[in-house]
Amino acid sequence: MESSGTLITRVYTSRAQIPVPGATVAVTQKSENGRHHLLAIRISDSSGKTTPIPIGTPMLSAGQSPGGATPFAPVDLWVSAPGYEVLTVEDIQVFPGTETIQTLELIPLPEMAIPGSRGETVSTTPQNL
Image (spheres, rainbow, N blue to C red):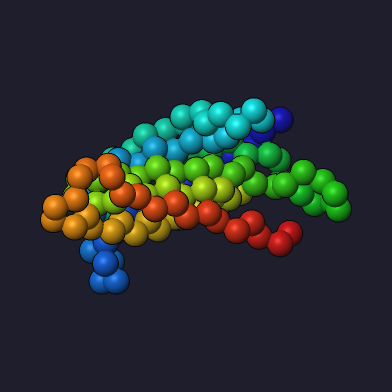
């Protein structure tokens, strides 16, 4: 039986953490064969936040014994907004019964850049459990 957690993203730019409204956030999960399955698409609001996204996770008990399954569900995010580089974040960990908040910093495109020509991929390091 599955459990669930939630994921909220906050999209911003610069060290001043200026919100990026209207950013598209796609949440995917890799299947066993490595293909991505779309779980949700959200648009950031005026504060740069998305509405909560429910994510299916393993039961909490799955990770309570040595050698057991990982007690979280890894998801990937693709974030895009006009005038900014595309950002990909891999392996975000969503735990059962927990609200995960993922901050996403977008980098503005140079003035003469071709849209979609630049991007950044960030890989999340798993926690030592």
